[in-house]
Structures are given as structure tokens and as C-alpha cells.
Image 1 (cartoon, rainbow, N blue to C red):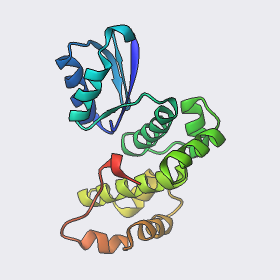
Image 2: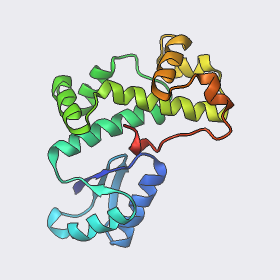
Image 3: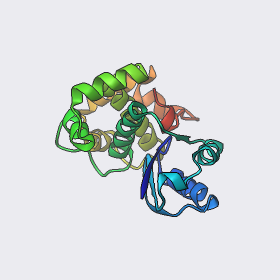
Length: 188
């Protein structure tokens, strides 16, 4: 078994696309999750240049540098937490990430800031705002429900962060005919 870290996997469709790449290369995948595929093969049995090219054609990158792998694991954990789980955990983000990755938050924070040019907390805020935009576009939940689901202390806190990030109020955003959103792997 070989774990292969992959950049830009942000949703179920990404996982399906990556599975397709591995099938095309006749590599059996035993497990797949955001940011990683586990194949039933030894590293010596995998043609990594071919895999790298095939993944790149689909918009993904093979992560070979250990520090970049950790940064991608942070991003994947944040995206999973905000976009693919039911509700925010009761613990602080720093505790969640430290426990999830098995590394100190101080190390994770320094590494992430150095590689990405923004703090983990800022990245979390930006991802939350993208989720708010998504939920507002659907119109299925009230702003109070959205605030609660995303762990905001109040609607006012969410609204303030929304304005700070987007430059417009939630009401202004709702009134837009075309509501601008970013791909999750492009949030910075």
C-alpha cells in the first residue's frame, strides 16, 4: 500500500476524477479521501512521472515535498470541516487541526503562513465566507441558521466578517443577479 498525497482535491467530484486517473493507469485504489489516495502497489511499482502528468491534466498536483503535504493536509481538513461536515466542532480550530494532523499548532501555523502568505485563521474565515455565499445562493437557510451552522457567535459577527472579506453586506450580496464565488482550492 502506498499513500499518495494530491493537491487540489476539494470535493467528491475531485475524488471521482482522481479515481479515474488511477483506473486509466491501471492502479488499484484501496482508499481515497480529500487530498490523498491509497493504492495497492509499492512505490517502486508506480510510474510517478506518468501519474504526475495524468493528475496535472485533470487539475491536480502530486505532492512530493513533506512541508507542502502538511499545508495541503491543513487545507483539506479546513475544507472538510467547513464544506463537508454537518456543523463546526465544539473545540477551537487550533485544537481541531493539531489533533487531526498530530502536530503542534505553533508548527502548523508557522508552516502555513510561510507557504501561503496568510494565517490559518484567515484561511478559515475565507473558507467560511465562501460557504456563506454558497448557502445564501441556495436560499434554503436563514442567516441565523447559517451563522449557527458555521460556529459564529452571532449574525452580526458573520455579517461583519462577510463585509470585511467581500466589501459588501449580506443583503447586497443576496441582491446580486450573479453571485460571485471562488473555487475552494483558489481561496486565498
